[in-house]
Amino acid sequence: MDKVVGRLTVFFEQPFWVGVFECISEGKLSVCKVTFGAEPKDYEVYDFVLKNYYRLRFSPAVETDVKETGRNPKRIQREVRKQVQNTGIGTKSQQALKLQQEQLKTERKIISREQRETEKQRQFELKQQKKKEKHRGR
Image (cartoon, rainbow, N blue to C red; front, side, top):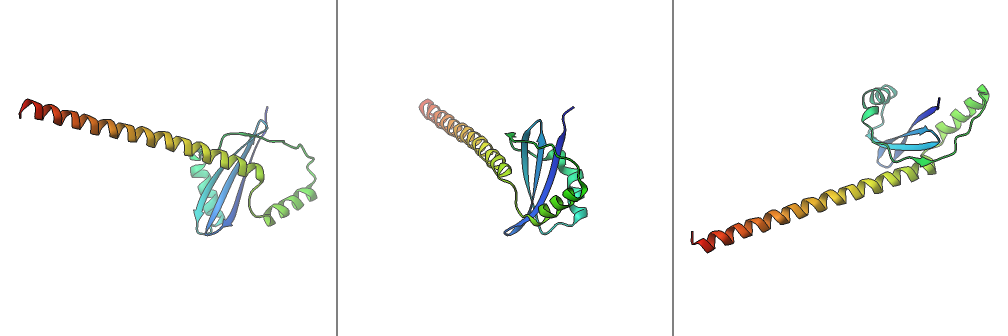
């Protein structure tokens, strides 16, 4: 059975507080970025995770290496302290977010292009209809 690791990092990125959800499954990293606005309290973050986790749109998976480490409690405590002091997100997470941003950008381009073409077609049809009405002498 595969192990899934999830992590939420909340940090201040001018001018808002941002949360980055990282999910490592089957050696692949997926990331989602959420903007909180004002500094969220612990219970607000917990409530947000409970209510909105399944609605989050994660980035496409990026290959990453997963290290299996021993569970030395002092080492874990040091790592937690280091992560709390460390602001920001890892480079793999940034790559995944950039990939998601590019994917959403191409989707937006496709949708807007289709809308432009349908509007253009509609305008053309209106012109043709007016021409026919004028030609008939109405």
